[in-house]
Image (cartoon, rainbow, N blue to C red):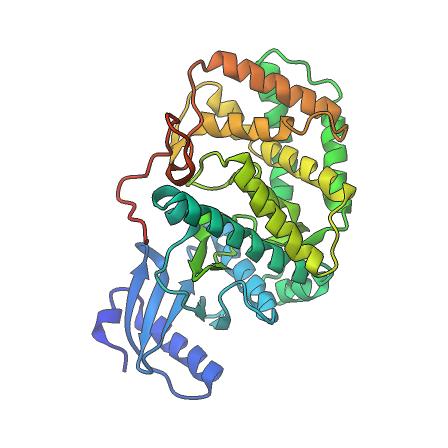
Amino acid sequence: MTGPSSDAVLPASELRAAEGVLARAWDEPVTALGAEAIWDRSHVVRLSLDTGRTVVLKRRRDQAHRHSWQAFDVELAALDYLNAMPVPVAPRLLGADSDAGILLIEDLGDGASLADSLLAGGRERAQAELIAYAQALGSMHAWSLGRGGGLGDLLARHAPGTAPEVRWLDAIRRNTPAFLSAAAALGLGVGGVADEINRLREMLTGTSYLGLVHGDACPDNVRIDDGVCRIFDFETSGWGPVAFDAAYLLAPFPSCWCFASLPAEIAGLALDAYRARLEAEGIGLGAEWEDLTTAVLAGLLIARGPMLAEALGQDSEWGTTTIRPRLLTWLRSFTCRAGDGTLPRLQATAGAVHDRLTERWPGLRIPEYPALARAGSALAQVPDGWQPAL
């Protein structure tokens, strides 16, 4: 029997389905004694079992919202795919009941995330955990490179009709007009830039560095325990250039509420650790990788075209800062690679956008993470109600 404390969190039908999934996974009867929502999210629930163990249950959300509906199926396919990794990076998938709209995964516990360390920890800890984060991404990418068929088969099974590519690629296609319009609104010529963006898209799809991309590799989407990083929340994952994830250390963090700038020397150490993980598996990162990274940084910027257009008129709060400091940081991250000859027109345009916005937004300061901040710098703001798990 399921405990009465569970009823307010999950309907009895989903609890029974969860017990059935676990019984099949472990080949023994299982009873859920309680359920509690995690982070006040009704679709992520921790179950306490009569065996003394806990597991995490994720629910498929409102069918009326196509993105949320597909996200469940995409995550199920990605976790099923990653179950084959000998040393896990993601939580292990225990099983799923698609009819009930639930999946069950290993409980990684309530430990600290990288966001906790960056916003409330010390410099030494934050640096070490950024390296652990980079190593986890490197392990996942090294394992998935060349294993695309397995993910495609699982997507066809769990998420039929869903495009296998990572969503950043679609965002670049959809939002190119908004990016070009924003540049034109700043009085800049954009002749030839659209052609170069087409070349950028060819670079992203034609690279040999294709693997599983998390797509939202934010500091709060990881759990770090005893120096080992585990990554969760694969709802926006897909197949594509793995540099999309690696570039989260360079942009940085283009899809994350917990944004601030990263010191170049610390980002460099983390990227060196990422590179070492791939090279240990015989995957060299040469000139093609450097060009791909430039293309990815440009793509992340173009994908934010509507955000750029809106910020010309007004700024808005998002997590640790507002939108405008993010845009200046992402523009600078791309244009700092100017001169490598990869995308010269686009780099020149992005540089001009950065200069115009710097003039238009005088006094704007880029925040730094409290754990890594220099004396006198602007600090990332911790949102009300957020409690670090340190």
